[in-house]
Structure formats: C-alpha cells, structure tokens
Amino acid sequence: MSQLDRRTFIKLLGAAGVVSTTGGLIFPNNTAAGDKARVVVVGGGFGGATCANYLRQYDSNLNVTLIEPNIQFVTCPFSNTVLAGIKSIKYITHNYDGLRKNYGVNIIHDMVISIDAIAKKLKLKSGETLIYDRLVVSPGISFNWSEIEGANEENSKMMPHAWKAGTQTIFLRKQLEAMKDGGKVIIASPRKPFRAPPAVYERASLIAYYLKKTKPSSKILLIDSSGDSEELAMFRTAWEKLYKGMIEWIDGSEQGEIVSADSKILSLTGRTIGTLKGDVVNLIPPQHAGKIARIAGLVDESGWCPVDPQNFVSTLQKDIHVIGDACIANPMQKTGHSANTQGKVCAAAIVTELGGGTMPDITYSTSIYSFLNPKHAFSSAGVYRLKNGKLKQVAGGLSAKKASRKTRLKEAIFASGWYKGITMDTFGKT
Amino acid sequence: MHLLIISTITLLLSINTAIAAAPNKIKIMADACLTCHGPNGAGAGKIPELKGLEKSDITESLFGFKSGDEKSTIMGRYAKALSDDEINLLAEYFSALDK
Image (cartoon, rainbow over all chains, first blue to last red; front, side):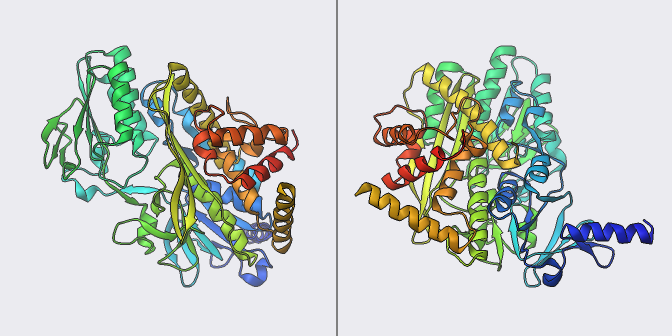
C-alpha cells in the first residue's frame, strides 16, 4: 500500500472508529473516539452475534466490533438433521451480512490470541491490537482431549465428535452413509457439564431414523454419561415405539465415562463398561470453556467461567463479560437459546450500566427442541429469575409425557419455526 | 385499580427510559419473545406473529396459557413465569408495534 493510499485508508477507518498506529489497526483512544463507548465482542456464535446485534439495537451510538475467525457460522442446532440427511449443511450455515448491513456491527474475521484486562486491550492473530471499554467474550466450548487416552483433534476425523458443527458434521454423515447394513454406531456422551445434553438423545433418534430407512439391520449403542433422567425416559418410550430394538442405552454415569479410545480399530473403553467396538464411532469428548477464556484467566478450577448472572460480568476479570456455553449460568443449560438470551441480557446490562442505571427484574428464557423424526419432536423449556444474585427456575419443564401424534407433529413444526426465528434474531436478518 | 397500576408502571418505565437510553424491563422481556417469534415479533415459520395484534387477544392468550385453560405445546410452560402486570405490559408493547 502506498503512503497516500495508506493515509486515505487510515482516514476512512478513522471515520468508522478505527485508526492505525504501528501498522496494526486499533480503536482510537477516548479523545479520538469522542463519547462513543467501544464494545468488543469475541466470538460470533449464538451468544456473541446476538449480543453485538442487540448492543447496536439498544444504543446506536455504541461502537460495536465482533471478532470471529470464520466467515460463516454453522449451527449445532439442527445439525443432527444434517446427519440424518433431512437438511443440508447449507441450511444450517449463516453469515454475518445481516449484523454488518442491518445493525452496523463492525466485523473482523480474525482470532483473539491474548487479552490484557488491566490495559483493556486485546491482541489479534494478525498482529493488530484493539482497545475496548467493555469486552464480551463468547468463545463457546473447546474439547478436553487430555481426559481420554488416545483421543485428539487429529484422530477425531476417524471418530468424529460432530459437537461443533461444520466439517465434523460432514465427516460423521459420510461415515454413516458408508456404513453397511447391520453395522453398529456408537455414540458416547461426555460427563456433564457439556453443550446441549438433550442433543445426544436427538442424535440417537435421528441416526436411528436414517438407519431404519436405509440400513434397518443396523444398531446404535448409546453410552450415556448423564445416566437416567425424566427426559431420557421420554426418549426411551418414544424409541420403543419408533425404533424398537435399534437403540441400546448403556448407563455411563458413575465413573462409566470413556477413558480411552483407539481410532484405528474404532474402539472405546470406559471404567465400568469395558471395551466396545463400533463401525462408526461418535466420540463426544469432555468439554470446557473456549480457549481464549482459559488464556485470559476467565475460568475457574471447573474449566468454565464464573459470572454475575445479572450482567454476565466475569467474577475473575474486571469489565469483561462472558456469555454462552463458556459461562456458568446454572441452572440454564448450555444451549443456543440460552446463549441468545444471555447475549440480549448482557447487551441490555452494558447499555444500562453505561447510562448509569441498574438492570430491572426480568425473566431469562431458554428452550431446546429435539426431533425424534421429522414429524415428531419434544421440547424442554426453562424460565429463570434472579433471586439473591442467583438464577432460579420459575417455570418451564418438558413437553407432556403423553401426547397425541398431532401434538408431537405440532412441536416438530414449531421447532422449525424456532430455528428460523433464532437464526434471524441472532444474525440480524430481517 | 388495575388501570391505575398499569399507568403507574408505564409512567415509571418511561421515566427510566428518559434517564438513560437503556432498554426498560418490558422492552428486554419483549425482546426475549423474538428468539422464537422472529425479528420485530413478525412470526417465524408457523410460530405466530405478535406485532400489531389486539392487546386483548394477546392478554387472553397469555392469561389462558398461564392458567392452563388455553392449550399449548410450549407457551403454557413460559407464561406461568409472568406476573399479571407483565402480561398486560407485554400485550401493550406488541399491540403498539405496526402490523
């Protein structure tokens, strides 16, 4: 870039609230920025994208920048429908054009490699540094491979987790397609807490749906670290009716989780369940907060990020909010809907606090829909309020245990509506 | 009496809005509905629209969901969390949006 071009470039960036210093791009200091508060959001999933969107909706004077390495986001919700061949990967892939065009969010496709909470600045992989007034970190999950001997990122191609949607979803789909009739699929869930626990049961259901149509002699072995529950009982009743004899449930709770894996012979070993071999192995590893949260000192000994649920401010680092799967917001489950809710609450809290106010008493909502087949779905809902600084469930619960086929169909139709609604709401589509 | 309470709350909320540009309680709670009901409450797929409906239609549904008199798949599980005042204010909010 020539000097003249560079100056023009800097001027243009300055107008947008970004200037250059030592060759990298940074936000201007307070003087240059005027009164515009600078909020940087790290991570463009359901939490971060929603937060960036609503920060701008609530205060169009805010300078909001979203940092996300990927140009497109592939959602975990509905990714089980891709595994079953019901929906395409394109259907669950979204971009950031809506946030940029409709809400004026600055989008930087880069990765944050360090955060200095005292100086209120962060460094990007490209070498640039950004300064912020408030930082929102929404990094999702990362996998704790060290808990399973023989498992790692590299051999997850052979034993896909498909618990982050995208190429992993395609790997698992291709393996299911290539499997012969009569084959055995193993699904192994990790110990809690992990992302979207009911999605394990939806996955077993939808893989069974696919196998029943195309390879009806095949079997699914579900090693379930969550153990028995009311929700599982609902699924098992439905499996008995829809996929009789196809899904074998194995209690992997009480130290039964997988401790070692062999990707060459596709076998898994658990402390109490011995060694099991499959033709397709879906090993979902234990999880903790996304890497940047751990680098930035936002996690406690549990591997997740403690926050004040009123505004999602980290209890470990000043002026940093953590939302989505990475934060500890019990009893809200780690789901896309929870992250979306937390993104909105966090945005409202930031705007309220910057204006000198305090957050009102509000409800926090979440839901997760699970398909048993394309015409049969359940849901789990939760509504929470703050009581003495902690989230308490005040309403919600599971779908009716006994319901007509018509009701289950209605929930399946609403599940599709929910997906359309949440993706439009999150990614700023109009 | 009911009207008086609603007017007082509305007044308090508008004062809050005047002090700071921050979203008020009902705005934040209404935005929670948009996750399923879509941007601006315009509906999403077969999930119905909320914007521009008659206030009485919204309150009738929400009070019905809350009491269980109105059958639903999921709304009954949500509406039980809402106070009567919140139902009235949410209905007022959505009915005031342009259809």
